[in-house]
Image 1 (cartoon, rainbow, N blue to C red):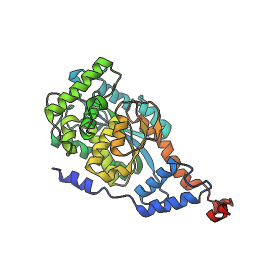
Image 2: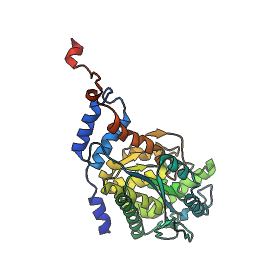
Image 3: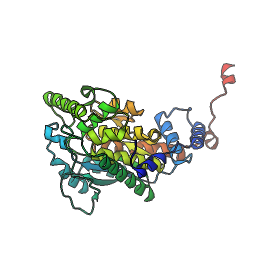
Image 4: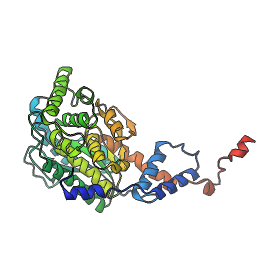
Length: 360
């Protein structure tokens, strides 16, 4: 049950893809100088983009990755190999252009937008988008991570950022994250919404050893038993065992979908946000493009729950939006095929023979 009218309006505004544009894109692809379907996933992406944008050969415009940053109270339980202080330190690294996502975004010609939605530190920098809901979540092993109202407000922050980007000419948005402890929260979300066990959902995150992994899984079970999140209510799950950056990314996805903008999903944390978005607005899945399969243990299960197939398998597990940004050139390649490849007619190339001629 939704308690926020603004959020209800965003969810209600997510419409089906444009069927006519998909059909026109499919016809155009079949007229290009190649056997039908021979470009595989590129053709599927091209048709998806046509349906999202409502035009057979879409113009995507500018590209951006939204890196949501927040802290997690569950770090008190010793679930990560890194201290919580790394979160604000990495935010400054993003702003200074020194993180992996900055390097890969420059390579892809994309902008990085860093958002403080719940970092447990006072950050003041003109380059930072400050939308702090609270100073990190509470320890979900001792109580709810946040209130339902805080989770809803974080989703709304993400949705508004997506809307602003679309208004500013961005036609391809990627999700990114930063938050020590966020694989624990994401694993808890998967455990509840995926109906699985923490042993299947939770992996090594920042590189913890076997003993700490078992402890992390026990903490997740404890948090779920204590808070009893309702699997039929995604916002209840998000507020009780989720994270502020996960909520913000769910909002980015919903906001992008509402404004008919494709959104590229990064790894494990982004996919946890995508699962929440999918359960809130099932039609939003059609606006998602899964960039890669993370090395994180539960990621394949997350993608399966959403109904997404990743474009890349690179054994990555960094987050930040790195995998999503790597997929940008492939997505743009799908559009270039539509725009620049010759048809059989205008290239003077003979098309496939009719079936009756082949049989004769």
